[in-house]
Length: 118
Length: 115
Image (cartoon, rainbow over all chains, first blue to last red; front, side, top):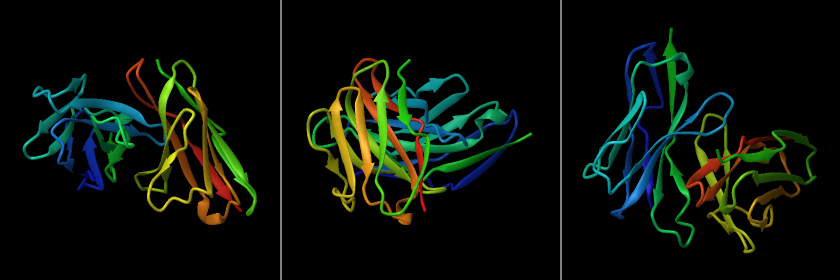
């Protein structure tokens, strides 16, 4: 079974600075998806960024980018020019490419609470 | 965009009663729906996966008879917590997988408090 590990329970960053959230995962599959989700105090899960494992290029969405190291099974999230609205819980998640046997489910890490200081 | 509506957003019920939570995909058809449970300051734990018209697949340790899942159509799944007890108090979140638009979309969650 796949596992996702987020080793930083909490992180803080100054407004306008850059912060990197860590995520490692374990899988025997060669193709899969990786995600970062944001959960603000409203608790609505919001997709931040998505990476397909077969793509070597790191995904980027505006101020959010990832460092995907497939061999190391590492998938970190970099937030540039941090804003107060970025404060939230961030969850790293894994999803198999398989579509049978319940493999479409997302496997989440324990999350990292990000605080943005003004 | 793809919207998943979860209702109610919060509910308080008495111990021993049953509570039904609805999860609807408003503008797309959901091939698969997922139900998660989230304890305070913890991650989402998958409870079950459901496909329209078939029985849900429950994760190990989740009581099928206690957490009844019905997926009657491509746009609606329900989770019924039967004979609720205080330890069932939690935040429940549904998500829906879609082909068009492609992705997994989450409902707003339901905070259940059993007193």
